Image (cartoon, rainbow over all chains, first blue to last red; front, side, top):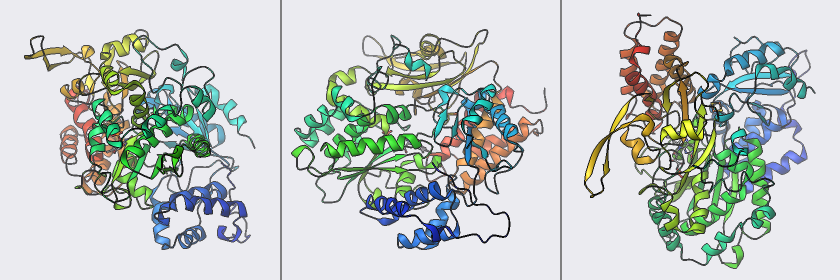
Length: 182
Length: 446
Ligand SMILES: Cc1cc2nc3c(=O)[nH]c(=O)nc-3n(C[C@H](O)[C@H](O)[C@H](O)COP(=O)(O)O)c2cc1C
Ligand code: FES
């Protein structure tokens, strides 16, 4: 997955995402819509995924654009963005670290593991979730807890961008982080 | 997963896992074909669809997604010639804590699933199918999408497959990190592009009104792989691997405090809980003793070490006799676990040893359910949140004397009062932890 965080610093005007849709994204969107011959509305989630994979998050222009593309009202798209934990309305870090929080991983030390990730990249482990993903000051990493990643037999696990890391120890953290240096 | 690289344990019988762990086996179609891939689809296209449904019925295959409904009976609800479109949906949401089997199939043996789905679609007269994959499996979505393209290119999918006159197209649909989408009517709403609020029942089965208000069958990934294997082995042989009423093998996913956690494919009823822990999984960590077992995913009721159950079974003369069965002698099949007041569910077995605090463990699960309630039904949305708040304060040592009774009361008032089984899924842990480990929840005494 590529992530292009949009900087909100400085006074440069923020360009609406819908103003800059590249041709290959448009082509992927057209292809995705064909998978739902019965109802275009079914393409809502796939389009949101394609959009977020490209832009890093979903802005207001995206909600309107996707709704128009599928002959829906913007609220039909916005209610999905606000329901599903996967979708974001703010830019994340370049690398997203998702540590599994649920029982088997917690028994194997995932709470300590998340703290170790947070401290290593400069995130306050107590920072909350409600204003975008907790992200390191340099914008390189976001760290969050997620629920069971269906890999409980190799706990604790974390999903970093598209990669599942299994049997992760606190000692592995520095090595893992350098793997994702851009 | 280290345990899978070992040769199969003598108690294991790898049927749906037979290729996934073979040295040198790759997920591409050539490799699958070399291992007998798509032979059963060819066979199926020469059979009458009703014959296939009958085979699945005779195989006694129960759904592997959690509810354990007999698959052939569910398929029997579809009337092939009712003139309506029919749909097939594969449930690849795999989100029940403790469950980790479907991901291995999606990654290592995607064509087995596709073949199972093509056979199912033919039997059900469905021309369009979706594989709903949770988005936390981004690689699985890529691998399965590629496998679908390969199958289309070879004529196993698409129009007039293998010259049979039957059309079937299958697409991948990614979820967006919501556990509720594993519930089949929520999954259907999600597929329709709506907020995934589970549908009000009745109708109880999507086979009556499902995707786009048409008859729809939703089956788990593992279930659909078993379809291919039933046609390969034959329903008689297949059902013999299990117990009466629970045929075939089941992947039991063992996690927690054992030496060799992992997914083990074992004939239904082929091991006792004791054999699973001490034999297959290498026992507990050194110096530890068993404390508790969650036998079928986080929603199943917890069992306590040392307890025993009165279970009825048929004696040699056909008479029903009741026997006292200790926990470790409990057979791991649907009927025995139900008799012990819990369930095989999704096959996720979580083992806890004497180092574990039950209040802490329940609080962990309560946080899961509080996070995942979709918010549609008031008892669940409010109740699960309060349950979480109560155990969170109890863990901090700030509980009050009434907390255990209040917890019980709230849980009792969620179960049975919600649109979907999430209400039970969230209440059963609370009810069973309180019943089995009351001393760990008593507030005040230390
Ligand atoms: C809250 C909830 C979550 C569920 N999650 C899953 C899941 O992740 N995977 C799954 O296959 N079934 C899940 N189910 C069960 C499905 O509703 C459905 O019974 C199953 O997919 C049917 O397939 P099967 O008959 O092959 O098991 C869930 C049910 C509930 C109530
Ligand atoms: S509990 Fe962490 S992967 Fe299941």
